[in-house]
Image (cartoon, rainbow, N blue to C red):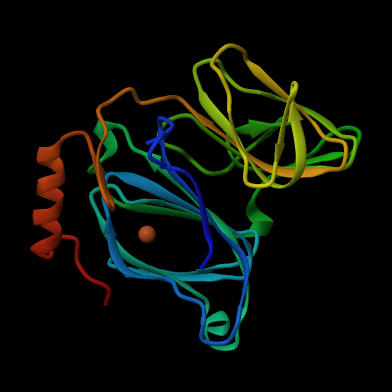
Length: 265
Ligand code: FE
């Protein structure tokens, strides 16, 4: 699997409250080539999986299993802990096929780190979308609000997660509260943020000096616009565990090793 990881990097550990962004593919696997992530734990944060092409199959220690297909979102709140597997669909594993998607890690505030795990799974048809008055901009509203349309996903702290598609010549202004840390990730095409031009796989980090961002494009572009209120809490991270202190990380490892996360049936 080709993975593009805008963060964390050696220079950028996280963008509070976001801990990681991975772009999977786009890649066309041959038969038997596609690899996934077999059983692994998470505690203390949320994983948001958004598939654009192909499908992922998941299974977890709470007895949940399902398929995340093109356009679908799975917002998993790991909370106190789950063990899950995330694999390309059986069809892609055996016959090959195209896979493209994103995974975002959203940190949980101290008060929610040990909450009961929960899932919010939305099919593509259930995710609100909005179109600008001139028809040139379409926004899939995964979290937050855009063009007067509100997301149906419930987030623990205020989060904005928008998939914005701009036709050639389009201009789009999105309100972003000054209290948010926010960034854009270019999925395809080219877009201008003021005089900064960004192209595929570029990440544009916004300063906290305004309450809106305007994006223009000559040839068309597709991008993710992501933001949220920073937690401003200590971040102790070790692989799949993200807590507030080293002691809590040690406890997570003990709990995991002693089977307290359960297992995949
Ligand atoms: Fe995972």
